[in-house]
Image (cartoon, rainbow, N blue to C red; front, side, top):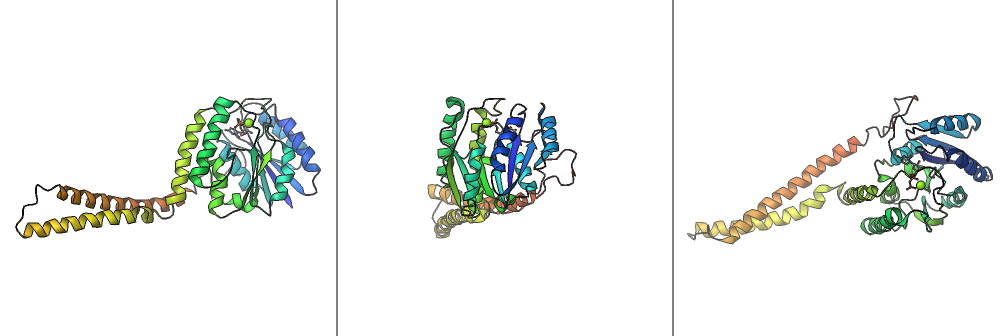
Length: 316
Ligand code: UDP
Ligand code: MG
């Protein structure tokens, strides 16, 4: 068995060497083979040269270098695309996650397809990080129906084919377990150690919460409507449209039998219902068109690699 460890890195010059040492210490003690993929997400500090140095000395290390900062989700995607392992583990580069948790998580893959690390005693500031995250975790769990306690954890283990088929972008990385669950995978969550960030700066602040909420709407929408929008909008549209039609038919009969109907509120209701009905069905049909465009658009590049064969720019 081969385990691939995927590490997204953005300006972590002080953490790279200790991280590499800590990973090696844990992984060398396991009986299975492993590789480490460092994804340099457009770092502007000494990160690139440090990574190059490590890769030269350690044959288990591979480095992918982005042309610019594409974000953690893109870094993970690149890692997933290039990983050769049967099991893929993601871990943050800042040593807030503890490599010591990796063997337990790897051992659970097989019985489960995804193992999520739960930062039970999370060592981050309360107001700007932990508090928004409590609300976000509760909301994501409610809205998506996937019961996890810590969606944002950087430490996760996957059966390789689960993530090789998922396309993610923006802040979508926290929704990988949710997206994976649509394919019917088995998810387990275990408690993991969390350390305060000792070196370097956190890349995220409070503004991310809003983006996460918007992404949640997208996820919910995709989950409920993306495959069959006409089935979502159609029935309501048909029901309202048909009711409006019957009302207007009734009024038409009255009009032909000589009654005046111009002053009746019912006429307005009938017209309104018919228009709404037609609109909803139209929206469903438009949705069907968007679905096909959406699937096409998934082939767009999510990241561009520096130097390496740029024809492989992450197309699906
Ligand atoms: N990261 C990245 N690209 C970015 C931002 C962050 O690859 O645009 C990496 C970062 O180097 C770290 C991990 O993602 O390894 C988590 O970032 P950070 O520690 O800043 O987030 P936090 O732990 O504060 O949520
Ligand atoms: Mg961190």
